Length: 76
Image 1 (cartoon, rainbow, N blue to C red):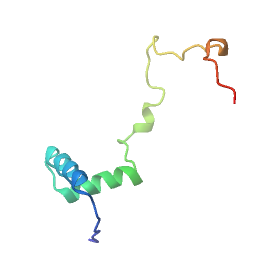
Image 2: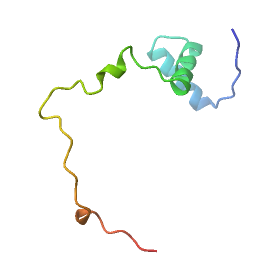
Image 3: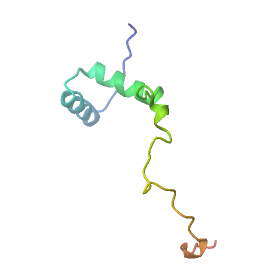
Image 4: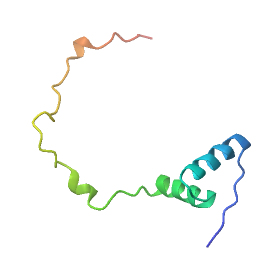
């Protein structure tokens, strides 16, 4: 498996160590998980099927607001 070397400041390293410890994993596994989440987000299986699945009458699109109640903008 390929390896990567990075330079990191001490305060950031401490934060990474704490996060890995909290998740009870190694630094390498924690970093790999974070990198994967950034470059290739992973969604649960059948995530797309959730779209439109809420059957609740209180879950409605709000009515359009009038621009007249908007804050005044600065003119430059």
